[in-house]
Image (cartoon, rainbow, N blue to C red; front, side, top):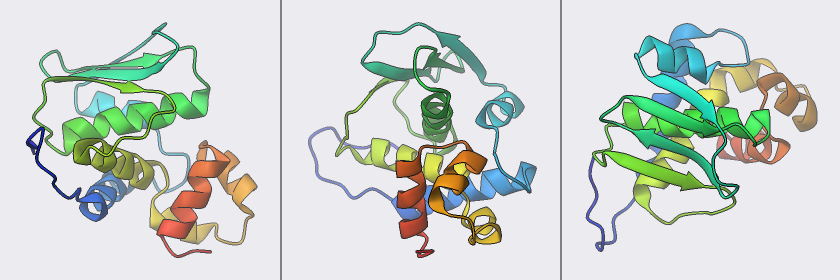
Length: 159
């Protein structure tokens, strides 16, 4: 999907989250979901390297490569990889992109990639299986940040 640069458009976050969940559940029946394994299945090379401190990852559609900042926390690396994989799976047309740490974006393509990553790493079906665990334990089990887990639980009406 390609979005006009200056035109306001709505992100399809529900569909993106569902696509992430569907992909996760095709290969994983227990957490944590391994986004690197899913990238490999799609013949996308994942490269971990030192990137500038404000960059969490980069994607290159032409080269079929995802670059992950090796200096960030492992949970951040997993989310970034899932986010970048989302750009590929969702068919975003931009050929190259770069995602920045601690920066939220109003760009629909980025919102969709975030929703995809959330659905991929924390699919509702798996969350429901472990719903009796406290959020902190769930975050550890799913290998995501506690903040991401709270958002996923709220989004999926599990709290």
